[in-house]
Structures are given as structure tokens and as C-alpha cells.
Amino acid sequence: MTKLAWGRTFGVLSQLAAIGLLLVSAWLIVRAAEQPPVLYLMVAIVAVRFFGLSRAALRYVERLLTHDVALARVTEARVAAYRDLDRVAPVGVPGRRRGDLVSRVVSDVDAVQDRMLRLRSPWIVALASSLLTVALLVVVDPVSGLVVGLGTAVVLVLVRVVVPRAVRRSGDRSSGWRGDLAADVSHGVVAAPDLVAYGATDLLRASAHRSIDLLSDAQRRTSRLAGVGEAIVLVGAGVAVAAVAALSGGLDPVLVGVVVLAPLALVEPLTAVADAEGLRPGIEDAERRLAELAEASEAVTDPARPVGAPSGFALELEGLAIGWDSTLVSGIDLVVPEGGVVAVRGPSGSGKSTLALTIARLIEPRAGTVRLGGVDVRTLAASDVRSTIGYLGQDEIVFDTTIRENLRIADPSATDADLLVALGRAGLGDFVRSLPGGLDTEVGERGGRLSGGERQRLCLARLVLGGHRVLVLDEPTEHLDERAGDELLDDVLALGPGRSIVVVTHSPRVLDRIDEVLTIGSRAPSAAASTPGR
Image 1 (cartoon, helix red, strand yellow):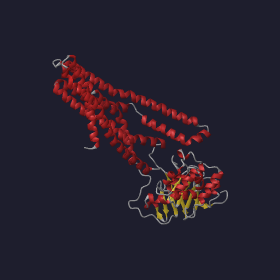
Image 2 (cartoon, helix red, strand yellow):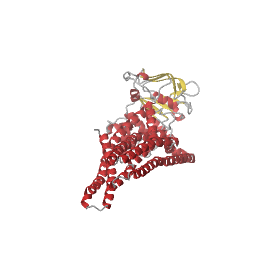
Image 3 (spheres, helix red, strand yellow):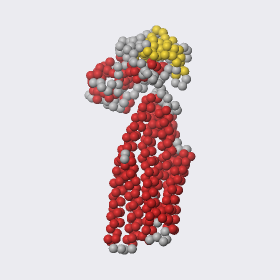
Image 4 (cartoon, helix red, strand yellow):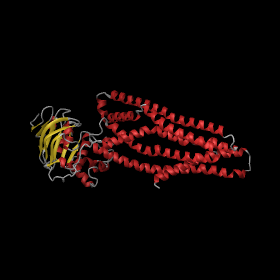
């Protein structure tokens, strides 16, 4: 037997111990009322102690085994979900904001555990314990066994049909509002400085409170409906008790207490089933969303037989059309020779960042060709392209850990000497050496203990450490003051000629430093040599 099967077996035994405790106690109380010699009661007394102790011990073993299996499967499901997210990134799932998507995926993966522990296991335990209890009653009194068996079957059918339908008809939107709230909070954390600066915090606060109120209303409706299943169980048990009491007139008085309390002994496993059925709609919806994520189209598709990575890293764009759901810009032609530096400019929303993502092979071009080292990138594995072309976004992720661990994402095998060399190339070497903790310095959440320029340089050092030969930098000086931006650009340009650099920017100070500028916008893209003030 597998560990899961053993765990469910112990769960059944634990429930049987609870039922046995109640029924034996009923027999003992009735028999003791007849005041027999105490030796007549010893077996029942020992049985009460045995069932009382074994119930807790068996439940512990059951939880230990089933949760071990469940946590292992949740880990597998979580890894699969991360792979799916990586596969569809950066396009993501349509209609989902970032905070909403993260919240949904985290809670949906937990549903894998809920189906195993909180849906299937209660049914298995309830069915097994009910069958064995009814079989015992049939031996004691066939009529009572038939009544309890029929009542239990009716209760299980009603719970299975009524409870999930009631929850679905209630329009339970708990998960939706929870996702909206997570998205509001996520956006608020990211945009907090800007919201405070522009006095727009009331807008976000109102949106968050709206999500909180709607979530609370949905959860209250769901909680009220959760009582429907328990009501069915209690009414069914009451009817069964009344029927058994009415039909057990000719039974030995000592056994009457046993058969009358038998329906009540089944209340606990049947209530667990009712609670489980209240979770079924949410679990099924979570599994459906995970299936949609698994079936979502890939942002970039690898060829069936990719060619080997090219030796050169010259970048060529020919007739390139870019966009997400539709073409945003077309007819882009650009050549970036090995060691060359090119700037891409255009108004907001013109497609600059989309072009950067397309060059880095994070999204597919809608038409045209991108060549790396003279090879069409569509014939290469995306991982080979990204090992050569590195992308640095405006708000690149800095993890709440040490400088060392933030860098080693690019190369887990890198030595401290390698890390310091990369930091030096990014203009951060002397700063890190001056810190008391050096490479072990904690950078805080989202790099909050570093300045804006230091965060950008740390991310730039990560690209250098990764060995990328083409660097695509999206607004690298966007959140920096003029001096910090100029110093960062100095270090970026100093990375050549061993690397090609593509800088996406609308900053005149940056454009004045770069000779070749590609302009994209409402008209056909054009590349020209820049002049001061261009």
C-alpha cells in the first residue's frame, strides 16, 4: 500500500474508534444503570479507554502520512505552475493583473492539497465508517440497520447535490475579489512613492476598500451557505434517531441505547463530507484555472530542432513588426554591429519596451526577422538567445536577500572574485567593498536599502556576470537624478566594445551621448546619426 492509502486507512480507523467510543459508552451507561457486578462492565470500561486513546493516536498517524503526501504533491504542482508562468511570461494570462495572477496561482496550487485532504479523504472516511457502522447495526437489529443505512445514503446524496449547487448559485466571488485586492495592494506597494508625490493615495485606498467590502460580502454569503450541509446532516440524523427509537420496541433495553445513538455517531463524518462539498466549487474552479494556465500559449516557441548558438553577436532587425495582440509598429530595420551602441527613442506608448522585449526573445515578432550573429533567432533555442542577449527593465527585480545571492542568480557557480569583478564593471565594486557586510549585505525588500542608482548597477552587474554579449537596457536612467544617470551611463558605455548595447530611452541627455538613434512612433521607424539636441 502507498503512504496515502495507509494514511486514509488510519483515518478510517480513527473515525471507527470515535464511533466505537460513543456506542460502547452508550452500552456501558445503560448496562451500569442495571447495577450488575462490576466485573460485567470491565470489558466495556477497557474498550472505552482503548477507543479514547486510539482515536487520537490514529488521527495523528493519519495526518502525518496524508499531509506528507499532500505537501509533496503541492510542491510538484507549485513547480509545474512556476514553469507554466515562465513559459507564458511576459505575456501572462489575458485578463489577469500581476497581483491578481500571483494571488490566484498561489491559492490555486493549494487547492491541489485541498482536493486530496479536504475533499476526497472525508468521503472515503465517511463511506467506510458508515458501511461498517450500518453492518454492525444489521447484526444487532436488522430493522435499525436498514433505517440508518437508508438515512445515511439519503443524507450523502442530498449533501453531494445541494451544497455545491447552493455555493455556485450564491455567485461566490471570493477568489475573484481576493485577487483584485491582491492586485490593488501589489500596485500600491510598487507605486507608493508616486501616489504620495501626486496626492493620489485616496484613489488606491478607495479601490482597496471596495475590494475588501465585496470580499467580505462574498465570504459572509458562503459562510451562511456552509450551514446548509450541516443542517441536512443534523435533520437526517434526527429523523433516523426518531425512526430507530420508534422501531426498536422489542429490542433488548441494553442495546436500545446503542442503536439509537448510532445515527448520532455518524454525524461527525457526515458533517466533514458536507464541509468538503462546500469546498468543491472552489477547488474545481482552481483546477480549471491551473489547466488554463497550463494550456496558455507560449510567449515564445522553440523550433523543433534548434540550431547551435552562433559564435558572433551582431544584431540585425529587418522589416520587423512588433506588438502584443495586434501590430504596434512595423518596418523596423536596424543593424547593431558587435560592440556597437544604439539608442531607441519614441513617445510613450510607441512600442519602445515592446521592441526591447522582442529583441531579447521574450515575445515573438509579428513579422520580419531578428538575426543574432547572422542566424535567425527563430531557428535558435530561446535559452541560447537569452544567454547572449540580456534584458534590463525599468523596474528590474531585486530580491530581499544579500548582494551575493542577488548576483548569483545569473551564475550560481560564481566565486566572490567573479562577483566583485562584475560589480566593478558596473561601477559598484568600491561601494560594496566599503560596506561592513560586503557581499553579505542585505539589500532589503525590492532593494529598499539601496539607492535607485545602486539598484540599477546591481542589476547591471547581474547581466555582466551572466556573460551576455548584447545588453538591452530599457530606460536605465529613468528614476535617477542627472548626476546619477550620467554616471550610470558612463559605466554602461564603458562595457563596450566587448558588448553591444541597445538603450531604450526618451532622455535627451542619454540620446546626446549615443551616435546612432532609432526613432519609432506613428510614422515609419527611422535610424539616423544623432546630433546634439536631437
